[in-house]
Image (cartoon, rainbow, N blue to C red; front, top):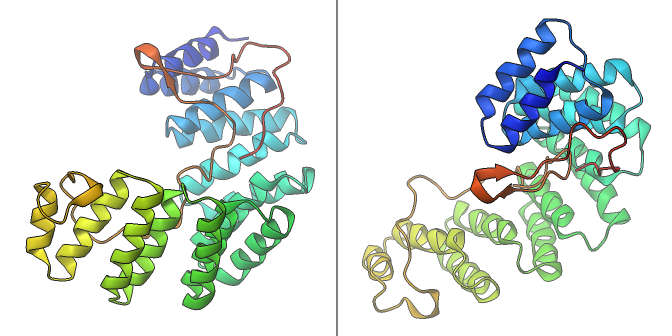
Length: 289
C-alpha cells in the first residue's frame, strides 16, 4: 500500500488536517488505491476533520473495490451532504440503506437530507419510521419535531420535542429547539420558562445560559440581561453568564452528532485524535451513524 495513506492517518491523529488531505490527494492522483479497511477509517477521519472532498474521494475509492460496503456508502453520503450535493448524497445513502435496511444511522441521515431539500413530508415519514423502531431514542423524537416545525405544524412539533425532553432531559439541543420555536412567535415569557426548566435539568449549560441572555435582550429587558451578565440580582442558580453571541437563536436542524459515519472518538492528549488504526487488516465492525 502507498505509504502516504499511513502518513495521512498519522497526520489526522495529530490534528494536521491540511497535510493529511494533501497526502491523500497526491496518492490518489498518482493512481494509488488504499485497501477497503483503510478507506473506511481514513474517510471517517477526513470527515471528522471537515475535509469533505478528500473524504468523498477516499469513500469512492472504497466502494469502487467493494460496492456492497454499507459503511462507505454512508460515509460518502454524509460527505456529499456537507458539500450541499444533496441529490448525490441521497443516492449514496439509499445505497447504504438497501444494503442494511435496519441500520438506523443511514435512515437518520436520509431524513436530514430530506430536511435540507425542503421535503418535509418525506423527512416526517423517515423519522416516524425510526421512532416506531426506536421509541426511546430522544434524538429521533427531536428530529421529527424539527420536521413538523419546518412543515409549519407547531403543535405536532412541540409534542415531539416535549417527548424528547421527557426521554432525555440532558439533551440540550432539544431545549434549544423548543426555545427557538417559542421565541419565533414572540412568546418570550414562555421561552424564558423553557430556559429555566432546561437549566434545572442541565445546570450551567452554556448554550442555555446564552439563550436566556439573548431572550432577555430581545424581549426588551436589557437591564435584566446586563444584571445576569454581571452575575448580579436575578442570576440565581444560573451563575454568571458569558457574553451572548450576536444574531438570532440557533435554528438549524442539523444535530451535532447526526452525521458521524463511524465511531472515531474525540481528541486525546497532546492534541491527538483518537482514530481507528487504518492499517489493521481486519478492523472491528463500526456502526453507521
